[in-house]
Amino acid sequence: MLNLSQIKTSSYINGEWKKSSKTFSVVNPLNDEIIASISDANIADAIQAIEGAKSALKGWSNFSVNQRAKILKRWFELICQNNEKLAQILTLEQGKPIQEARGEINYGASYIEWFAEEGKRIYGDVIAPPSLDKRIIVIKQPVGVVTAITPWNFPNAMIARKAAAALAAGCTFVVRPASLTPLSALALAELAEQAGIPAGVFNVVVSSNSRGVGEVLTTHADVDKFTFTGSTEVGKSLIKQCASGVKKVSMELGGNAPFIIFEDADIDAAVQGAITSKFRNAGQTCVCTNRILVQESVLEEFTTKFVEAVNVLKIGDGMNESTDIGPMISNSAVNFVNELVQQSIKQGATALSGAKLTQGSTFYPATVLAGVTNDMPIAVNEIFGPVAPILSFKTEEEAIALANDTEYGLAAYFYSRDIGRVWRVSEGLDFGMVGINEGIISNAAAPFGGMKQSGNGREGSKYGLDDYLDIKYLCMGGM
Ligand code: SIN
Image (tube, rainbow, N blue to C red; front, top):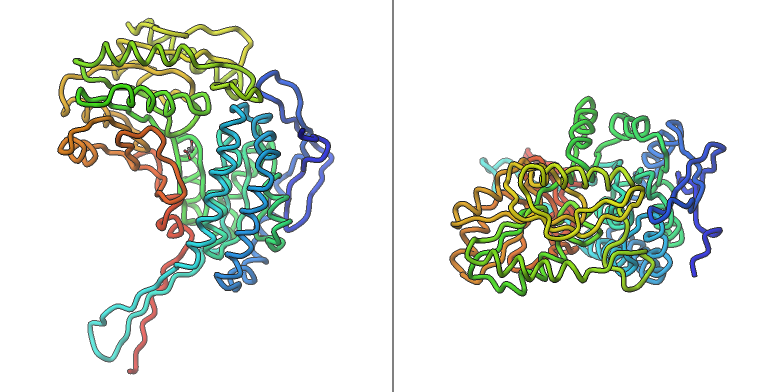
């Protein structure tokens, strides 16, 4: 069983655990009980972390790719060995079911393993020159000091995914995790230290001062690149801050994923896909299904089977092995979701399941809304909760138009067994990731990222290193 007195509760800066007299509390979203009291880092601490990362840059970028790979693999192995402890910390501070938390720890670790290997495959180019007295060569070099702000919904994996690529490329890294879930980040730092990651290469700054520390991370002169996962609204203001120093940025922002079921689909498979895609992490992921679009001829069959499957989902304490849906992160998150539901019901949607708020509770029931139209609040907004709105359509063209009718472009899903349609719809959807007859698409080998207002850059895959590398062109003359 997890011993809370042994977990880290202060920032990890330049290889040291930095205590502070000012503290803030981390609470369990299940019952609001205090789990830990955290040393609250200030602006000077954030600056010290960036300066530490700057000093460590030369040494780390001069390690051979094999040396970096060895250290990253040790980090990966330690994370895997400590899976249960890390998962329990995660469930306690974030609320997700323990089975999902174990999955997240493996998922985060898989990026570290992936980039430990991928770092060995950083290639340049030799390009045919326009005249014989020159040679054109392209090399790739680490961008330098990377800063990051990561969200509460994946307190482990969103840090691992960014840090793994940055470190493999030879960059150094400073992250400010969400103040709601800093314990997972500090647990990762403890294992990074044990793995032998040198002081200053991986820093975690935990602070309740999101605005002040955010400003330092986006504007400090020693920062070369900033990466963020979170809402589109916050992402836009962070991009503005980065603009003053023309920092390289990558952004993984909000989503509004359509999940389309065509009449030729395997309906039972579509029901299962929609359940996993919608209710994972209580609906609190950027790639969760946001709108279910069903072709009219299979609307009744899909809806009946889907509601049956929703009604057997178990809601409860994430620590319970049989829980499917844990508490949401906070009361305000619950109230936001309920408001979207109630407004949409007023505008004509019908609740087939759930839709009832228990005052003061962080649980929201798995909810299905039928008769939804694309202009209702539940369809326009990123829900970030366990609510499944069902819309209907007549034709393939209408489905694509409805799906694309959003400012977001992160993930989309569709179910069809018609090979021509599979190509047409895949190409017609304006989203960075498309699940075809599949509701779970995230993995380390795949490029995760969005189009439109869902952000830029890709995390994971062979493309994931690009965001942490500068291209340098060498022109050799005097041949
Ligand atoms: C996210 O919600 O930001 C990430 C989800 C994932 O990696 O699958």
